[in-house]
Length: 104
Length: 472
Image (tube, rainbow over all chains, first blue to last red):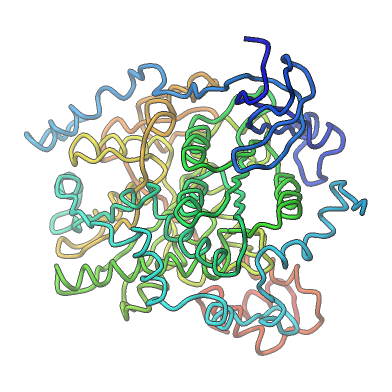
């Protein structure tokens, strides 16, 4: 979905401080990159496509301008991939509690 | 019109913006030199314990259950010398409305904002505090903006922080997400200026006073069920508010003999403002990256004088490793049937180790837990660490190198909290106090203040000043 219409829930992007304009106390690797910002809200423009500069109204009613980067943004965080390294812990603990296994 | 909106311009207006956004006249508590009147600040601008109980009671905050962790105690006793192995308890702060003890801080801050007639609240936080403020704002009918440091320059976000953004949005808050950098403060100030909202800072007197009920409840609960105060209370330490508020609450309950111990995750070597190191850590709070700088200079916070002053109350301070906390988090689920978030288990990890040094008839209380869920859980956090080049090993956690590996203890007896030399931190605090002091002479009042601030005595302060070659 590349085209968004008025009222759609979208995410906009802005650069707050360009590289080279970062605060003096920032470490060198951070100085080399811009300070970036994302805010979500309802699109106020009649229609827009990804990359357009648009205006949104955030959920609490604040108006923010920025580059349209996502239409109907969703959460993708999860429980991650299976972590095999954790598998021993429960059985080890139950073993110690039940039988007094103390060896390594 | 046309205000200077550049970084320098906005930072220059910092005091003016903050005055409007918190409406505390911090100057009223200042005197010449280093000292300021902390207790007077807490009295004049905070709330009494009874008022806070009422405020929190109205919003379902506090009076969380205390559980005895019998299996973890039993386990600790297996590795402890004969007669050692204190009983371990946990106060389940995850059962607060927003899933952490931060609801206590947010309840008083939001109540205060509403009372003063603000239309909304803003907080700069990537942690549980955001969700707490958003939840309280929802109850109070106030608008809420949360400003987060969330992504690195590759736009890769910490799963734990993204989950907290989701939770804030669930409560109807606006979430502003930024890449790494302390200039978050610039965006924060601009938002305060634009909206005229209240700065629900973590470090105001009412925020910290909100945590006092936690310490008070612990003392009351123990008197009721055990007939005595607990011997030790362990608090996870970052900005210092958790420990400060809890300790003050214990004191208000008259539980003066309780030892208050701080615990942080050891992230030595990682720079908190580094873009490339941001996603090399698996803990976004409760770690030494906040714990150390805030203990040794609390007034680096977003208000002129922080009400969170950990060194005033800390009897001992320990670090634990990321791998140890992950192991204990899994243990809490597997043998105690409590699935909770990893960051909140930092103090539990220290308690598991410390219990083994205390007599069996002693009690040790872990004063918080936090909620868990997608992103904010050992599984996604370790999976994320692997994706960011961190090696996950099973071995001796002592061999860990933060930012390079996470070592899950091969055996629970390898879990050992490491004590930090508090006198070194105290010295560093005194150094910072001298450095930030614009006035000339160090007065007797300053000496007394520094002694209280570092929980030492005037002799100790004088000794340090002599070492630093500072006249008094």
